[in-house]
Length: 170
Image (cartoon, rainbow, N blue to C red; front, side, top):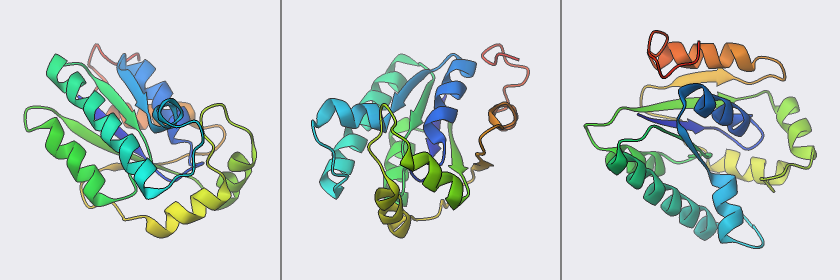
């Protein structure tokens, strides 16, 4: 199973994706960590973003080949990027999309804080927001606040049909 967690910078997707991967006992790949491993200075250019997605796609391909569950975390701001991951996962693999969003004042406050993995600030948020393409495929949308991670994880488990599955930590 492949779970794609996506949303704008500061939405809380990485925090959620880490917790979801733990709950599912799945591996985790995050764009922030990949970006830091590829670039000494991040500028969030189109070329940089596409290279990060390419690397993430290669890692997902290996997980699919090995039959491992995986949670991928990135903005996935364009439909063509999302489509590449769906196509790569193949028909025999379940792929799920979970969109994380937050109110803009929450995002502004989160992005003003120093974060270990991400250099995205409110300017990056605004840039990606203008490039954002709404999701065309079926997906779950969850609002991130500062105190609802348990509720988000429960809704995700239900969406993923795992509430009776041994992979879920209930």
